[in-house]
Image (cartoon, rainbow, N blue to C red; front, side, top):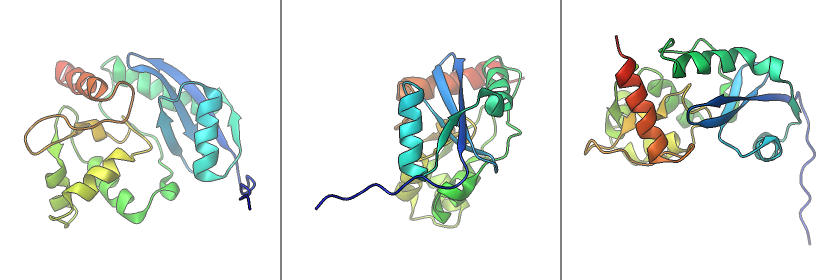
Length: 179
């Protein structure tokens, strides 16, 4: 017996891309805000991953992601230390939302440990769960999971771009540009 995929429904997700020093980033937005930033290889791969996750149609509309692309470019040029973009939290669990909202409080150029964030959200024994929530961050860079490090001060896991190499690049970029 084969399982049929549920049909796509609901309002579309609009996508576009921006070329950055860490590679091409694909951006997806809903009517509510940013839902994803990813290093997916191409438009087809990105749409497939979005459709699998959200069960919504995907449309290439670069104008819809233009502001996000502009702010990302400014970040990489050292002209922006935070983002002023709405986030669509609807595709995340309540725990992911709690962790990623705490991640947004980490200042530009700073770092926190997984344990620091676990304590910040009032769950001091949940450092590993915090790590899993960070690993599943659908909006890297904008939600700065690259600023979260191990208790030993080392860089642990990064799912974007070239992994740890990309995480190190982002941290160095922020240190180099601090006023």
